[in-house]
Amino acid sequence: MITQLSAAEAVELMRERGLRINPETLREGMMDRRYPFGECFKTSNGSVRCLVYKSLLLQWLDEREDAEA
Image (cartoon, rainbow, N blue to C red; front, side, top):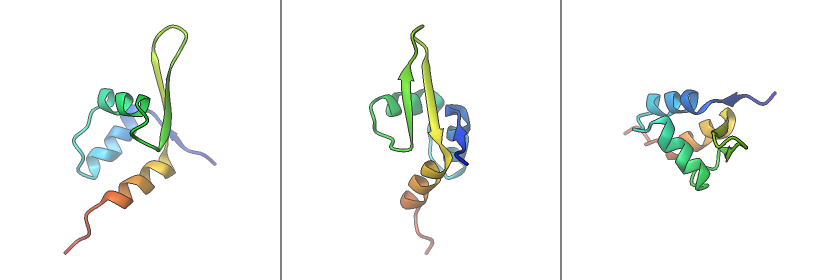
């Protein structure tokens, strides 16, 4: 099963891990392909749609988390 998150749900997980981010910043970063854990695109009516893959986001966060001393 593939679990997808909205930008708001992804931001919530990212904030829980200590990142300071908002949904708009996440969307912009995904549009620029700075974040490799999902896809973001403009629809025909000009709105932005983001699909964040939970497993890839969690992996990305784990790779960047500080090791405890």
